[in-house]
Amino acid sequence: MDPGGATHVATARSGSTAGQVGVQIHQTRRLPDFLQSVNLKYVKLGYHYLISNLLTLCFIPLIIVTLIEASQMDLYDIQQLWLHLQYNLVSVIICSAVLVFGLTVYIMTRPRPVYLVDYACYRPPDHLKAPYHRFMEHSRLTQDFDDSSLEFQRKILERSGLGEETYVPEAMHYIPPRPSMAAAREEAEQVMYGALDNLFANTHVKPKDIGILVVNCSLFNPTPSLSAMIVNKYKLRGNIRSFNLGGMGCSAGVIAADLAKDLLQIHRNTYAVVVSTENITQNWYFGNKKSMLIPNCLFRVGCSAVLLSNKSADWRRAKYKLVHVVRTHRGADDKAFRCVYQEQDDKGKTGVSLSKDLMAIAGGALKTNITTLGPIVLPISEQLLFFSSLVVKKLFNANVKPYIPDFKLAFDHFCIHAGGRAVIDELEKNLQLLPIHVEASRMTLHRFGNTSSSSIWYELAYMEAKGGSARATVSGRLPLVVALSVTVRSGRHFGM
Image 1: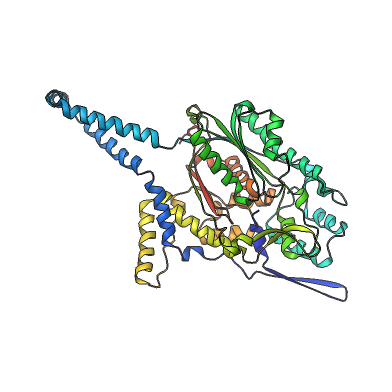
Image 2 (image 1 turned 180 degrees about the vertical axis):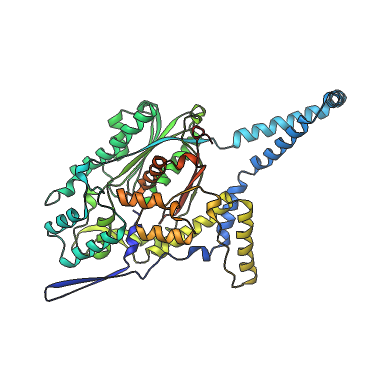
């Protein structure tokens, strides 16, 4: 669960005098300037990813040189080459064997291309919309929140970047709310089946053709699992490889895509479906602990379904090709481990608590992730400037400001997780992005709220609807908490 939007609030104080309640919100923790301090070991890790494709990098120049030389040969050169081959049969055999061996190794070791055929985002019905006034009125009528908590939620809503047309589940529209297991299952079925129905209709893929299914939802993990619910609903085949990821936060959507990508490297000629959602019904907090109230104000209903394929025939119709996935995990650090923590308050009410150290931890994870990603995607000129500044600082202990790479040279579009307005603002500043680069994130947050792991697909849909993605070649993902990046390249049907 990504508490990105929670960064609006670090501490809260309340007091009551003469029947009046005041809430003071301090923003003492900001996203650190994570590009001012980087670790060389993560640069090394990035180059390790790059060197893993060394064989391909070596073969491509060799093939280009061979083709250039062949194109310059005339009839006399061909005759001389033929005579030379006739009198050097052993050399010909050795060269042919080396060539065949090299091609065999290349074909056997190269990763299979993974295509993102299409995706679908669920749009809830209009009666589930929760404008500010309705949200606050329902919160007051539940009688679970004191005046200080109500005022706190009002201020969070005003500063969050959410608009008036975001959605909350059906159970939260009743007075009192009905957060039952049945209602939570109903929410899960509604969003997952809605997204999948659209995906199958758009791609004309039959459910029986799906060989891999990965579902991620952090806070709702019933038995049978959500993946089992989908298998049962669509009568998927008996040998399907299904997985259900829980508790992995707002980055889980790309983690699930990474898992599906790895599985597609093993299982040939098949489809993989990735379903990303979050369930709100049973995870609404009905207490007065400030750090646990923030998710109520930010998280909203949403779901995405993504179709991946390793079939060579799909390269023509695929929207994108999955190129790089870089993951960074900070769970070994105790502060990072507890920065987003599901627990009970002193009254026994369950919710998700957001640490005041969240922004610093998220910034550190993102710094590591970007440092690793740089050598893979940045042009050589940016890599040299970036790497040389690090070496100077490391060797000479100089007070040298590290060079900030221009990631706009590597990416045409950025899908920054729509966790909250403060997160988007700070990333825009630290990565030196233009307003147009974060427009999709801001508009997704305004229209749909924080839909957790599915938010990046809503952003991509926004860019496609606006027409910008049709001219794109690369799109990047920069979520928080478990910082992770995925790079996709536009498909051929866009005329790239």
